[in-house]
Each structure stands twice: as structure tokens, then as C-alpha cells.
Length: 303
Ligand SMILES: Nc1ncnc2c1ncn2[C@@H]1O[C@H](COP(=O)(O)OP(=O)(O)OP(=O)(O)O)[C@@H](O)[C@H]1O
Ligand SMILES: [Mg+2]
Image (cartoon, rainbow, N blue to C red):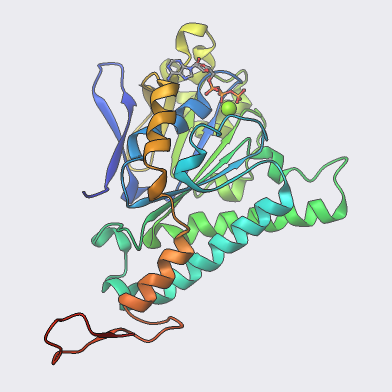
């Protein structure tokens, strides 16, 4: 079972719009409360739940129950604690560096997507919902929290910038309609931009880039109507202009059931990397298993 793309939704002429996972290091999702940002993630998790080549990490800045249903399919699910968030992102950053160091030796390629993700080298999808919670450094934050936020920004920027060829895909969601909700250095490197309904031109600029002003027909300010819940304007690298996409309606019970059914596939990717080091090549703490060619039952592997 290969993993190359996932259904995002359908455009205005009901053509399928697929998200090419190999081509996107990061995705930003903006929009007013209640217009379908988190449901888009539920849809994606539902689509990918049975694929053994993908591992999810959920960081939910809302700190509520939104991700409880799909949490079983994730190797980690955290709330709005910035220290815990930083710990996770540091951990992923380190794994990214280890993967960079081992990629050629393990997989024989410079880009994971040339062979595709696998069980030991899965695509790692990091979802940061209500992302602004983690990036805020203004009034009321302690010096320690501000330092943590700065480090988070720096590490997430690096994950997006350098993670694609080793199988990292970062998704940041925010309802905050200001330019600083997702720092520009992160926004600029996320090549897929999704905007559900927004209230201001500034929010649309922040979500999609200023070019959206030249496409009034696709402008997400005109999505402010309950009939457009679940409809987003997207900007993709390489694609001219903007596309309106309707995200499929999510059957929450069905997605919860799938996440539960395939929970056995959730596995810490650092642990999988250790196994890869032992079976595919160094670097790793354990030497390569050497098959004993003289053994008649073939079971004698020297670990
Ligand atoms: N694609 C969709 N099709 C139909 N209904 C949808 C769709 N997406 C969302 N909805 C409806 O809108 C509700 C709110 O969606 P969601 O929780 O995704 O909003 P949100 O943008 O994440 O809001 P917030 O910023 O408050 O977290 C859902 O519970 C669902 O009823
Ligand atoms: Mg939400």
C-alpha cells in the first residue's frame, strides 16, 4: 500500500482535489471559529488511519476534547501546555536530524519520497491546532513562556523547511485572524495554504498571501455564511490562482471507530527509527543482524 496523496475534497465542478503528500512540507489552515478547520484534520485522519506508513502527533492548543476520538491513532496527543509542546517538537527535530543523517544509508536515496514512506520510515504528520496559543509572546506571558514560544517557532520552521525529504509534514491551524497568529517565517515555508471563512482582508492575506486580493471570486471573506461551513479556498505551490474546495462531511463516529480500530498502527517513530537502524543500517546502537548462512533452519540470526 503506497502513500502518495490523500483526498482533500472537491472543487466547484466536483473534481477531486488531492493533496500530494510528497510535495508539501507544511500546510496552514486559517478560518473563523466553527467553519471546519479541525474537521479537515478529522477527515484526513479518517482517510489515512489504516495506512501503516503514517504516524500522527497532535498538539491541541485548545486543550479540549476535539482530538480525543482520533487520539488512539496518534503516537502522542498533547494539550495546550507549552513546555510539553516544546519537548515534543525538540524530540521531533532531533529525529529529523537523525533521519537526515541516515537517509542515504537506510534507503539509498536523497529524498524519502523517491521510495515512499514505509512502516519503519513513516510519514510523520504533526498537527498544531490553535497554533497561536503556542506562539504568543505578548502581555501576560512569563519570560520562560516567551523563550519556549521563540524556540517552538524556530524548531517548527526548521521542521517545515528541512523535514519534507525525510518524511515530515506539519499542519498549523488557527482561528486568529491576524498576521502574527502563525509567524511569517513558518507561514512562508508552508506551501499549501487553506482558508475557511475569514472576517477581514488582513486575515485572508495572512492565510493565503496578498495575491488573493486579485481573485475576488475566490476570496474567503465571501465564505461567511453557514452554507459555506466546510468550504475553503486553497493556494498550492505551482498552481496558478486559488481553488475553492468543499471538504467532505465527516462522520465523527465512523472516524472515531477507524482511529480505534487501527490504534495498533500508532507507534513512536523514534522507536521505529531505532529498529530501522538495527535492520537497515547504521547509525544505531545495535550492530546489524548478520544472517548465518550455514544454519540449516535459517533461524539463527546473530544480533
Ligand atoms: N466539511 C464539513 N462538512 C459539513 N459540516 C462541517 C464540515 N466541517 C465542519 N462542519 C461542521 O462545523 C462544525 C465545526 O467545525 P470545526 O470544529 O472543524 O470548526 P473549527 O474551524 O475547528 O472551529 P474552532 O476554531 O472553534 O476550533 C462541526 O462540528 C461540523 O458540524
Ligand atoms: Mg477547531
